[in-house]
Amino acid sequence: AQSVAQPEDQVNVAEGNPLTVKCTYSVSGNPYLFWYVQYPNRGLQFLLKYITGDNLVKGSYGFEAEFNKSQTSFHLKKPSALVSDSALYFCAVRDHGGDDKIIFGKGTRLHILP
Amino acid sequence: GAVVSQHPSWVICKSGTSVKIECRSLDFQATTMFWYRQFPKQSLMLMATSNEGSKATYEQGVEKDKFLINHASLTLSTLTVTSAHPEDSSFYICSARWDYSDTQYFGPGTRLTVL
Image (cartoon, rainbow over all chains, first blue to last red; front, side, top):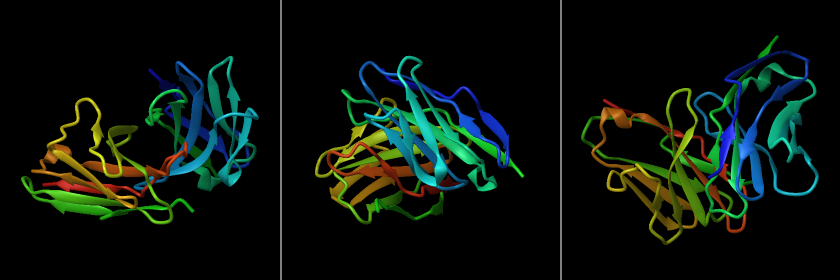
């Protein structure tokens, strides 16, 4: 069965500094990996995904993530954080050989300090 | 593109009544729709998966007679919470994807409060 771990409940970063939100995963086959962002009382917005190909994936709002197969990680990164990046971030995984379901991590709350 | 809407955005109802939540894909045909429930400060819990024209597949522990899901067209799925009780109060989020797509697109969510 697939699973996702986001080891940090909260990450605090000063505005302008680089940010990293960590994610590790476990699947039996090849993973499809996703990052979503949720603002208060809103649904999830798709940021980026890794399906195959280049390990570095670029997404919306300047975010990127690097797929690392040996470490089974898919950390979300941004070179320079904005206060508006403050939100709840979810990593998710789907087993390529499995069903439609994607499994979400528990979320990491990102606080960007002005 | 890939916009999903939900209606209503919030609803308050009395215990024992039923509430219907609509999920619509606005600019694509959603062959599969998903319904999630999210408790405060927690992750999303998948309730059920529905394919257009078929019965929904419910996750373990989700009462199918309580949470009725209908996916009657390629742009609309509905979730009806029957005989709602205060413990059903939650944030309900739907998502949709089109055929052969690997990405789910989410609606803005519906906050249900049962008094």
